Image (tube, rainbow, N blue to C red; front, top):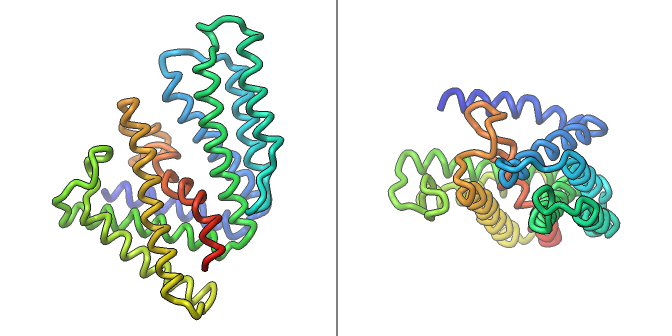
Length: 261
């Protein structure tokens, strides 16, 4: 536990300055993190089958185009999606070898590339839209996850779901309540003293709940492949996706939520 906490603090010490400085440093960080996340997700499916190197590269290029080809929080460009569809389906006919690369492989890649690409695109769009909102999203996910883990270990008695046996109802409830309180205080004191405080609190409460669904979604993916972690790249924490799962998933609803707070 001490090692896990220390590693988490080191990660924050590295990431926070990059977020604050922004610019090319932030873009490089996103490029590296998304590339590692992409590797983790394709390694799940193609652990026992060697995917052609060219296909891996085409998937990675498509992913980065999806991420950096969109910079408007409320507008999604179509061309990166078209590029993804074409670059990952045309090789099926070129190879003509279903053992090497087939339609199942292609649609697995397309689904994951588009999902990760859109989530990372929303993440960067929120960052460029407002750094204060970006930190609000970060606070919600970190506080929800942290308090859910702490309370779950201390007083958790009732399992939340079979998908993730270590999660408890007690931890989930306290994590949501604490995250809602802390994030609401941040919003009121840093972003805006909104007249409709109830609306702000309600939206943040919903966001905290949604972030836990993101955690459970990625747990379900790991459970399907009988994996504990997506990788072991981060000591005591697992993989990149193990750390940013709820944060990534939250971006999908956060782009809507900013309209109401």
